[in-house]
Length: 334
Image (cartoon, rainbow, N blue to C red):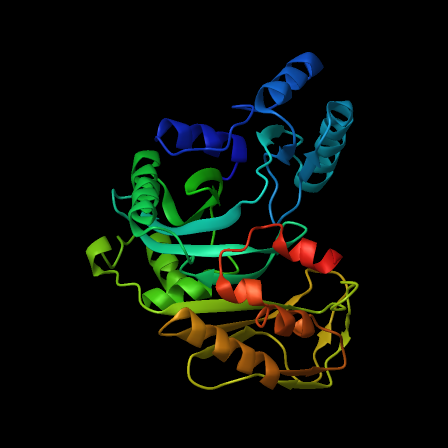
């Protein structure tokens, strides 16, 4: 399931809806590739089968750019992921990114822990996540969650995992599965009360799941802001020494971070330096607590994207919920 092409094929067999696409990897037959794109309709998106973290994707709006874009994506995928396999999908215009957290023990047991909305993204990389996803009919939510757990059992999946979907016009379209614990797992832990990492370790040691689906109760709402060492306007990396660090606290606030006074942020790795998580009985309370937590946070000596988060949590459209994956980039461009 870690290979996107194989995952899509497996989910189609399991009856889970997928984005219209090439139904497999693209070959060197340029005429076939162009025919697939014409049949789907532009714009299309080329994706690396082994990609991840928002990398290995390219949107194509016109046929004249298709073949060169495929070649460039294949080259980048081979260099970045040691796998130059690519495939093609319809590029949806205004979808949301909604994903379902699952746990499966490989012994015939699988559960879901609800969903997350990760639509606030920049360059396909998540910025703010929340659970549960707002504005989704409960019947549709349960239908897709059930399909995910059934797929885990049919595939013999073992461990923690996330089924990622695009959600548009009331319909879900599977795009990929992350076969690991994700950065945003704390929001699911907050609303479910289950320690996902602990459960994964139990599974890895050969133990069955410690809970059943009927034991899971999802309550309240949670947000996560990814704090990066970067300029909040240009997004250039900001390595250096942290001369002052104060983590926020209070009811419903959690901070996952390795920072301390005197820590040196290196220039070599991902810029993520902290995750601020807020929880409340409802979305409005959780968002208010996040605003207060961001205002309380102090990180001096380097630049961070906290000002961006402070702007986003007070943004009227985000406060209403249900923004698309393109919203943040359009906002930044204005």
